[in-house]
Image (cartoon, rainbow, N blue to C red; front, side, top):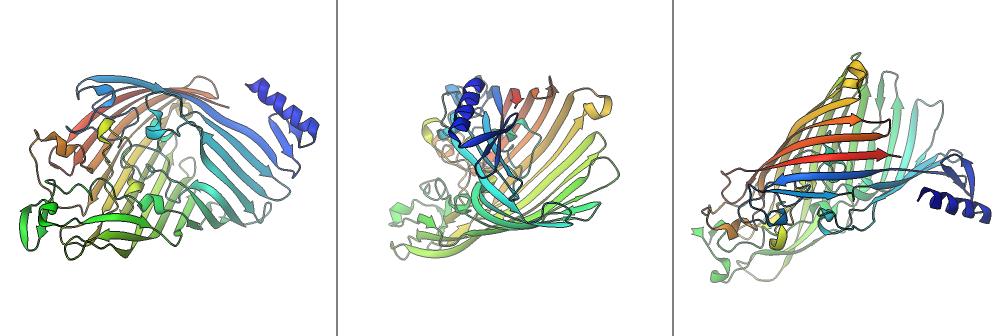
Length: 464
């Protein structure tokens, strides 16, 4: 494949469209250097009581486990669709940098069974820096698709395929089209890079399936002054959300700070906030079956710290969200034939016909020991705990464990993950690793019961 790529580049150079700038780099007519990078990755997984290879929620009794297994049975699966290709753009004359990257996780459910997956776009952006050398501050403008401002890193190996483990502030489908402006400040021992962005965040708020349309026999309502388990259709009411849209982009602001501590590498801190206005079309089902629009604002605020102490690095993130449940992405929500949604909806209609927002609080605490810094041994040991807790959900009808059909459409009330991994740098560009994850999940049905799953991942990654 490499020879084929080199042949294509050489042919293009002969035609005059590009020139060979240096080894591994080509230059276009516009003086933009393009270099190719990425990684090839293989994941082998052994898991029980979860719906897929990269699930971050344990299955409840109504869900179908991967491979049709029962909770105690182990299922093996593998995939290489995490493999990523990246084009790095650099035009020093014009002060432009950028990236176009893609992976192979474009199929429904992420191709967890190892089947062939569709090539999909991840990043596609360019950034103009207005002062390149000798400046204490550098304004910049970014245009394109890249991560939302709240994207944070993780030491879990699940950071590559899905962004992180349950509850980590990074675990979300976070790449969105945006226009961002910022200024880099170099103050010596302190560096700042505040930015403000106009983003399309509606897909992170546009989640209203599952919970809002699963009223029958599942939730307890206060309807017309009476309480109890009510079938709305028996009272000729059908409270439901018809659709959601927005007529304005979302906004975000982030302030990252890097500072020296004298304990090793610089520490970093960030604070961010994001918002998206939504128009929610719904039927209250009590006074009228006609739909109405309601203006709502989804918003979140978060912060994080990474603190290196010689060969140990401690990090943590915390976020609070309203009407942004897809930012608390619970991966593995398609569970066999039931097609249930483990992530609660951002909005729902209560028994009084009022529109409600779901709230979420999520945080993670992680640590990493780099033995290469300690004794020049190419091993890294990492671990952490994370969780997300959803609140302002409907009152519950606690069904018995035998009524499994109710669980199949029940979203998550709380999801937590504890993980530990070891990585070995076999070469400068090749990593082998093993990770253990334990997911503990509570659902809105029978919220006092915790369901657990276990997963072991064997990972190989070669960077190029």
